[in-house]
Each structure stands twice: as structure tokens, then as C-alpha cells.
Length: 74
Image 1 (cartoon, rainbow, N blue to C red):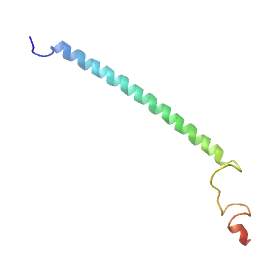
Image 2 (image 1 turned 30 degrees about the horizontal axis):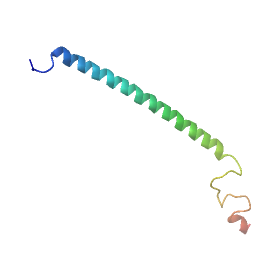
Image 3 (image 1 turned 90 degrees about the vertical axis):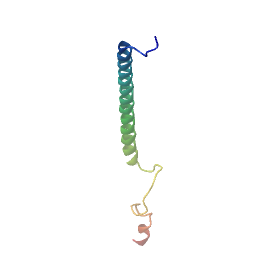
């Protein structure tokens, strides 16, 4: 009657949960790898742009050739 699920039903439910957990974990790992690749690409692009002259970004007043703060006192 209403005695709850049988042992076979419990076993099937446990296997279903395990399979769902494995699929979820695989999806999480896939996303983590994609994010890792995206971050690596962004960092490499940033390093390439850092070497460019005349681009937008921070410029040091102390390293500027002749036009910076220390250049006034030479």
C-alpha cells in the first residue's frame, strides 16, 4: 500500500542523482576551462598593448622622455 518507495526505486533514484551530478560537474569544468582560456587571452592581449606607444593608458611622469616632471630639472 503506502509504505514508501521500494529498494529498486531508491536504487534507481540514487543512480539518477549520481548521473545528474556527474553531468553538472562536467558542465562546470567545461565552463571553468573556457573562463581560464578567456582570461589568458585577455592577459596576453593586455601585455601586447602595454608595449604600444601613444596609446591610451597610464603614463609615468617620471619615465616620460623630457616632458615629465623630472624632465624640467635636467
